[in-house]
Structures are given as structure tokens and as C-alpha cells.
Image (cartoon, rainbow, N blue to C red; front, side, top):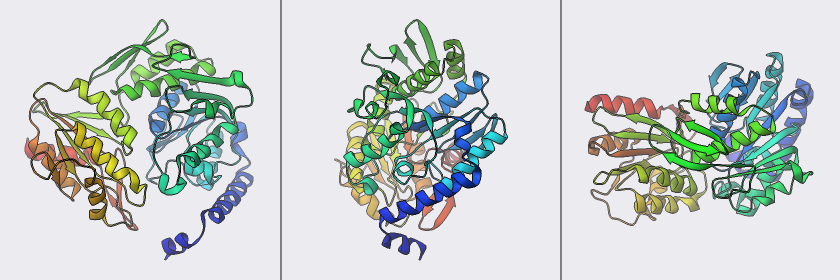
Length: 419
């Protein structure tokens, strides 16, 4: 009934409700954001990783920091898991979190900020000091309808910030910088253009770590993936604006041993590399394959297990299928979070983009655990298994139900059965 009523209410009316809640929450909790230095991270892909990196740098610099991200919340050195499945929580929860940050002596708050939260004014009353843009590619068109409206929603973060950190390698990066009142406060980062604030060069990739240079400083990441270099550059640029010493930044990034569900690597006793990643967009798929394929040993296989979320942009589904069938040796299509959609129909829509018939190279197994088990069964020494879509989430959404789910736990259990 609640969902039925929600479908009947137009979004503009819901947004008025969200704004009213945000105003009330600000008043009730005493406008806590005004007493903190706020950094907001937005973008289609890379928000969570960049948020975690900036939080780690601030903690290493001795700054007591609150962090709110898709996967967890930090209050200083204390961490708790985000089980809500929301990138940015409700205005009430967010303002309560910010007041707790003040009560715990935090100076900074790093907030992963979604386009939905911006469009709905859930972050009203938060004076962002720095706005960070990772990229904008196709996603959430079920809500925003067009890329223009999607960009416009994300631009709102920059219209209320003092400084901007923007990926120069994305489409129309200047569109977001134009929202900042002082143009000298707009800073770009890039792996392609040397004439930017932070330029990543001399890049070396492998499964265990990544190395790159920023001017004379050498950085090491124990988080694989080329796109994670872009995320690190965003964090480095943010640290520079905050005048944090580069040695502190280098140390903090090097100490990060991985982010749950983001290019999280497991290795079986049989020498199979298993990568868990949250990739859910065409751009994330392309970047994932761009990072993994150069590491593939000739004669081995890439096995990709994935599906698509229900009640989300349906147009991207065949695109995901097309990308996977182009790059993976074996595609295993499976269930993800169907929400209120027919899960089999979601797979049909992905399958429309898969350019191969069902057989040894394309397998469809609706049960996600069985699909993962099949991938492990097929994998041989040197193979790479990609399991995408769930990342570090702790539940699977089926209608109103939230079924407990841990991608890593399922993988470890199925590996144990095989080994």
C-alpha cells in the first residue's frame, strides 16, 4: 500500500515534503553543518571509494572526521555499517549524524552525496566547503529521465560549495565548475591532461597494487583498478586544497588495504582471482574491464557473474549485456535486487544485448548463489572471476523484503565446498 501511494504522488510534491523535512531537521538539530567543514563527493562511479580515501587522509592528518558513505559511517575512528541501501540518508538521519559529529569533537564531515539527495533537497542547510565530482555517465534515468536533468541535479552540489574538485577527463567538466562563484576555486585532476591541478603520470597496474606519480611524489595504492587512480587524484586534490602535507596523503592512501565491495580481491587455493565490485553502470563495466583485461594471462578466462537492479534505469540493461559479452570469456547472468520487478524479465532485458547463445560461453542461472558456485566450478588456475552489482551490500531487495546477503561470505562458502 505504501508503495502504491508513493507511485501516485508526483515527484515535485515529494520534493516539497523532503525540503520541509530538511528544514525541520536543521532547526531541530541546531544547524550542525554550520559548525563543521563539509566535503561532499558526487558522481556516477567512484563516490564511495573517493569518500573513503578523503576520510582516511583526514584521519591520518590528525583531524577528527565523520564520514557518511554508501557502505559505512565513521565517527572519528569508530565505524558502523550502512545497512540502509541509500547513498545519502534522509535529511533527518543526516542532520542527526552531523550533530553527533559535533558532539564527538569532529572538525570535518565527508558526505557521499547522491543526485537523488540533491534533487530532493535532502542536503538543504549543508554549506559544503569542497564539492568533488568523480564523473557523470548513464545512470538513474528512471528518475532523472535525461542526462541533462541528471547533470543538473549533481550541479546543485557545486552551486552551494566554496571549492570544486572535478575530473577533467569526464564529459563537460566545465559545466560543474561554472557553478562556483570564484573561478580560481575550481581545481581539475586528470590522467590525460598535464595542465591541471593534479596530474597522475607513470601509472603501473597489477592485482596487488597500483603505482603512479604526481609531480615528484610516488603514490602506491593497494586497491587495484585504473579508475581508482582517478579516485585517488580527487582525494589528493582535496587534500591539497586543505593544505595537508603530501607525505600524510601518500601514507594514508598506501595504508588503505581495500574497500569492501570495491575491486575487492579474493584468491582461491587453485590460483583463481575473484573480484567483487559494485559496478552497475555501462561506464563502470568498461572501466572494470579496462583494468582487468591487461592483467589476464593468455589462455585463461574471464568469467563474469552479474545481473541488474530492479526499479532502475531499464535502458542500460542490454548495454551491460553487450559489454560483458564483448569482453568476458564466460557470461553468467543472475539475479541481483529485483525489488518490485519480475527478476526473470530483468534478465531477459539484459540478455537482449548478449551477442551469444546460451551454452558454455553464456549461462543463465537465476539463483545468485548457484551462479557464483557455477563460476567457481568452471574456473581454473589463472582465471579471473568478476562478480558485480552487490559489492559490500548486506541484503538483497525482493519486493518489501530485505534478505540477508553477503557476497564475500557466499563466495568463501562456495570456495570451501570446492576446495
